[in-house]
Image (cartoon, rainbow, N blue to C red; front, side, top):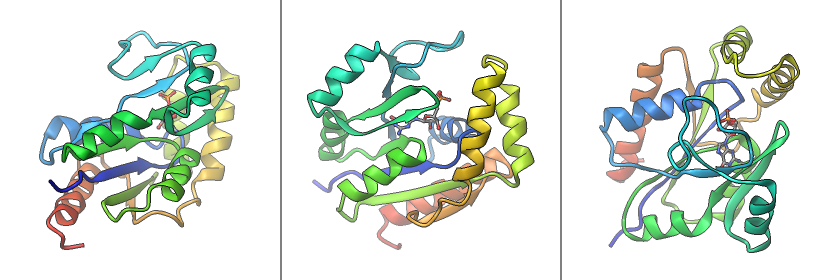
Length: 192
Ligand code: 5GP
C-alpha cells in the first residue's frame, strides 16, 4: 500500500490556518485525516478536549518530550504545542493522508525530519499585515499582552516562506482552501 501523504499547513499566527483547515475538512473534497495536537494552553469556551487538541498539563507535555513522542513541538506565546509522532506514522502507513496545521518552528522541524517525497507543504499568507492584526484582535479571549506577542510573532513570521512548496494567499477562505485542495489532488495523482 502506498504511504499516505503528509500535508503541512503553516503560516504566521493569526493568518487563519485553523479556518482554512476547517473549510478543507468540512468540504471533504480530498481524503484527509487531521492530526490532533497536544497543547498546554488553556481550553477555550467552544473547544472540546480531544477534538481541537489534547489539552494536557506542562508535566504531561514534558513527559511526552522525554519519551520522544513528538514528531515536532514548539513553544508558542507561552504554551507548548506538539504533534504526536506514532499516530501520524500509523495513519500514513495505513495509506491515509494526514493534515498537520502547525506554526512555523514546528513545520521547520518536520522538514528536517521527514525526508520521503510524500509530503506537500503550504505557507498561508495574509493579504497584508492589517488583515493579520484584525484577525488576532477579533479573538476576544486573549489579553492585550498575548495579542501583542502574537502580533509581533506574526510580523516576523510573514517572510519565513523559503522552505515551503506553495505560498497560498488567504484572501478568501473558500478560495484559499480550494487552491490547496487542487494542489493536494494533483500531488496525489503524481502530477506534481
Ligand atoms: P492556538 O492557540 O491559536 O490554537 O494555536 C497557536 C498556534 O499553534 C497556531 O499557529 C497553530 O497552528 C499552532 N499549532 C497547533 N498545533 C500545533 C502543533 O502540534 N505543533 C506546532 N508546532 N504548532 C501547533
